[in-house]
Length: 404
Ligand SMILES: *Cc1c(COP(=O)(O)O)cnc(C)c1O
Image 1: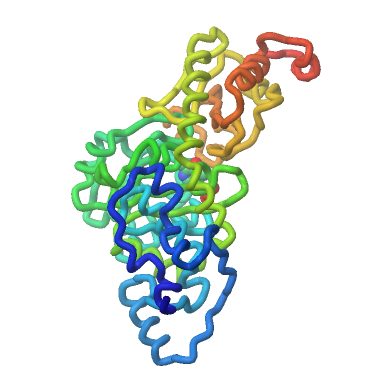
Image 2: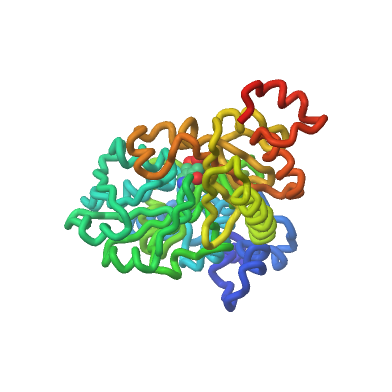
């Protein structure tokens, strides 16, 4: 095989559309068998030798013009990495977009989007609350020079200005699991790009690009990685926008490490199975919580998923202190179940009045349901809610003199 097909393995592969479960285990790996490999190689090079500096100059010029991945061998790790490119290819296939561009974190990915639009003089953002706490903060504080107008979905069209560069929504939203009608919102945006944060739903449950979102953002730290050991972000989009994102990534440096790219590609292969199994657990827990008199309200999305938000009558801090199997920790989307109190942690950075206004009350808890047996999860939740103090719960109960 020639060296071009070794280094740019996907360009010559034309694959008919395949089912999501098939893409999850094959996308980004199409060249491997021809190379005599099974597991994808991890390329840790920061630089790449080339005896043809005229050729390098031409390829760097081409990148500066379009941001397209340079043909042929890589140049420098901040410009692109083959292992990370496999993950990007795979995620784009799963989201049904032309391209995807990976970053060091979800926040680095969102920052790159804002920088792309800001650099075009389109600094105004229209956004719908709630968003993930740090996304809210980045927009509210205007850290990257953007200016935000908060609105509800029905107000988007009226909030647009000539300098509006982006409309941003999350659905289901972090942490309330509020849903927006992406098709209707995309219609309201007109020609302004709609960014949908698809971290909670994943492409297994929802593909926002099919509903009119031009940009699909993930905190890949969550379900895409899936095991609580990778921090990453990614934007799935058309190739034109992807080129601009690569140029910003090159200039600002928020690159994803190749090892993280490898772990994410591996994570994607089980994504459909994980999301479906965890969603079954979550649907059952949501049913039981809804029927429970200790629980005031349960938020579980219409489209399903593995996230639950619920409000307790008692003290939510006691529930956090009372879990034994479930891990009391921020983040989500791991194989194990996590619970956290958004008003204290994930959305602490949002001004209290704004938080309340977005439906993030002080009694709200957010549960990321994992792959444990649902009966074990329920036993733990039941105990944490101050319910059945069975023998093996004595210690937990002792720590909760005023159990709710
Ligand atoms: C966690 C999260 C982010 C931020 O991603 P990081 O990888 O932590 O930078 C953005 N959006 C949503 C919905 C999230 O849950």
